[in-house]
Length: 107
Image (cartoon, rainbow, N blue to C red):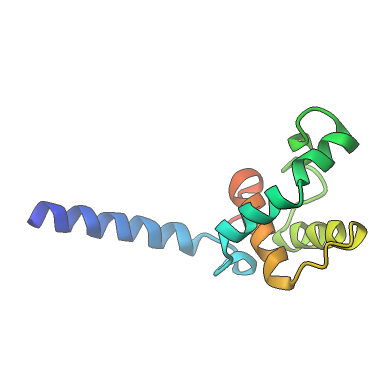
């Protein structure tokens, strides 16, 4: 019982530390929503048509997207250009997924 409690405690502490490293712009973002919106709006397919390969080459962490705010701005730009009419929480969710998977901005 003690060992299980210790394991759970360590897992929760690890999750807390990871959460603390998330930039304020992405705290509370719904990652499942972001994943769903990326799939539904076919983001990678659109990027593949514009930039080739599987579309993921556009996510270059060392490129012009170098802050969480710039990432959010780019997602908003895509939403506007494609008339997706995303709400701010949708944009934050998508940006949070992109940050988690590609950019890795921290606090």
